[in-house]
Length: 415
Ligand SMILES: Nc1ncnc2c1ncn2[C@@H]1O[C@H](COP(=O)(O)OP(=O)(O)O)[C@@H](O)[C@H]1O
Ligand SMILES: [Mg+2]
Image (cartoon, rainbow, N blue to C red; front, side, top):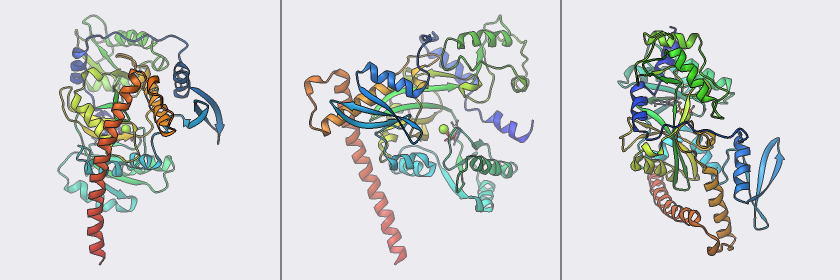
């Protein structure tokens, strides 16, 4: 194995015992089935939700992008571009996009998050020294990229040079103007995507890597075939079967297994290091397995960031009993297809909540809200938003106080 493969193998934030624990906690392991004509594009899902809610909209092409103009009671109230939720501001975007700024705002609000050091490309020597002196396990990643590009774990003095360059190359490939590099403490556990909107927890999704579950009868190869038949029932997974290729054979070899081996009953075997659905991963809705404290922590993370209201919060949990996780990322434009079409678990519809909330807001601001027209979900939204805005106001006040104290110190230094 070369240095890159070794890192990929270790880049696995999931293991068989977590999978086994998760399955044992599920009451209903039924795989969801979806009709053939469901929309598979986020933009189309949005349009379907709007139609279901009788909200009027026009589809408009602007600067080569499809947008929706949403109307309510005869007025155009906002513009929607795929995944860009109108309640997030550009400053919220800026903070969520920048891993150091996110960390700073979460820390100001005392929310458990990452611990990072930032370097420019010229600071190779300083970064190397940091790695040399650091007693903790480290991760290297770009300051502001996505999709896991340029992220590597287990950085040591001997592999630092290779991964430092890989991290910069990933940014160059994506034409990042001024690449910056972060060295961050490694966080043990597995990652859960929490969807939060205006103070309401909507959904928790676990993305698990391709795996099979033994039954004491079938070989790994046969189990993969069976799994691929199941995957065909899910619109998101059907065009991404688990592939049998050299990488898989090598990973099995690493685990001292072969494709022909029969796994014992309830024995799990992970087949790919990445959790991407394209590599045979699965999206599992696990709201019922997550403690309330962790849901609240994810809501708190969004309250801590000015201008952010809809977010996909990525939190690392050590196990399903955890009452506190570590927030590693606050995504400002989460794609909701994962939530609409889980492989296992209850399908969610966050877009409905978002649009209902935006319509109520618009009616309040236009002084045309008719309380008699509100249904139970609308009332729930109002209560959640009231609590959330109250908390956000309190948090941001503390954050501004801290920023002012820092400014004051700087002013004194300048004098
Ligand atoms: N500090 C960390 N400790 C452990 N795993 C991490 C850490 N940072 C990132 N990872 C893993 O790497 C993946 C990508 O990192 P992330 O910071 O989310 O970058 P991106 O913005 O590209 O998604 C995460 O989903 C997580 O699995
Ligand atoms: Mg991420």
